[in-house]
Every structure is written in structure tokens, then in C-alpha cells.
Length: 250
Image (cartoon, rainbow, N blue to C red; front, side, top):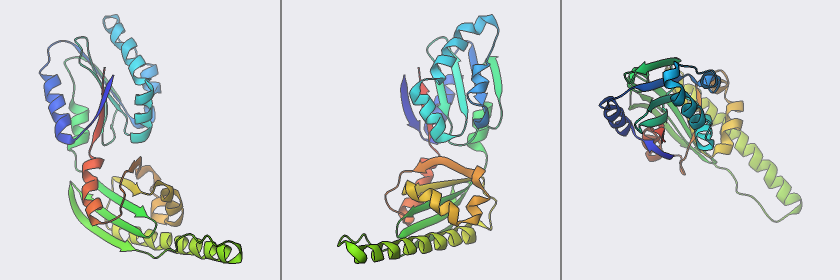
């Protein structure tokens, strides 16, 4: 088994190569909420029984299971007896459960990739944040900001406890302000997806301080974008990461 992250163009090239391949395929699309039950119940004509057995083994590979949990977008399976055997975790959710045999069916995956996506991005580290909205690949709204937070105080005793309380108060105030900025910047858009990035430990407390996020938990991707800084450059570059799919080849 091999795995690779595929930019949108790379994935299109893979689909084109598979579409040019002769032979029968089994194509399976699984919505996020239906995995793995949909695969567990998979049954096809006895002609494809070997394919079905191989598919069930493939999707239960540890790396695939981890990827499915990380992406939360469902699963696409293209399976051919001549070595073209792929499990793709797309960048955006699969919209329907579907099985087809014979000619390769890339329609559902192409639909997920090609539709217009309005994406909210929140990058946060302690003391800085970058918020943006991408509409069909274009950054149409953004806000970059900072907030002062004391570093840890290590002298001990009352002084340390006093600084610790002050730091916690500053963190809460910072999260409230970021939450307000999220509502201000996202409120004018109908978002399809929301992505967090930066310090992954901030995601939960920020959500607790932000009513906008609390009311839109289904939009929030389980993927945490791996960025070190919360600034405009990082914000602009997140789109590349967001639109990558994860492909496994067997």
C-alpha cells in the first residue's frame, strides 16, 4: 500500500488515467456518516466477489482508518483487477452513497471537486489570529489580529499564581475577541465548511467562546491545518492544504 497527498490537479490526472484504463471496475462512494457500515454490508454479483473481499480488507487498513477520521469527507473506491486499486479520501465531502460496476464512474468525486465551495478559515495561536473566507478559491474576506498574553512566570509562590491568573484571564479575553471577529467576518456568508489551523489545543476553548461556531459544528472539518504562524501569508497558503485529497494505492 502507498499513500500520497494529491493536489486538485494531481487527482484529476489520476482520474483521467483511470478512465483510460480498460477492464471492469467496481466504483464505490460512501458518505461520511455511512462509513464503515456501508462497506461492511457491501455485496455484489459473484463475478466481483474477489473485488469485494479486497475492498473490505483495504478500507480496514490502519492508515486508511486514521485518514478517514482525519478527513471526515467519506470514501471513494476505484477497484480494478489489473492493479488499479485506489481508495481516495477527497478534500470535500462525498454527497451520496453509490455503487457501480463495469465502466469506471468518477462522476460523484468530480462533482465534489468541481462545485463552488465557500470556506471559512480560522488560524489561531496564543497572541495572534488570521480569519478568512475563500469563495470558489478566492480570498474574499480576511482579518488579521494580535492580542497580548503574558508568558509563564516561574518565580514561584504568590507571584507565580498571580501571573497564572492574569494569563488565564488574558487568554479568555483573547478567545472572546477572536470569537467576535469570526462572527463579524463569517456572518455575511453562507459557508459550506470551516477549517481550524495553528495551535490545535485552542480549537475547543475557542468554540466554547464563540456562539457562531457552536451553532455550526457540522460545518467544522476534523482536519486541523498544520500552520506555525497565524498571519496573512499562512492564511493565503491554507487553500492549497485544504484542497488536497489523500489517495491510497494497493
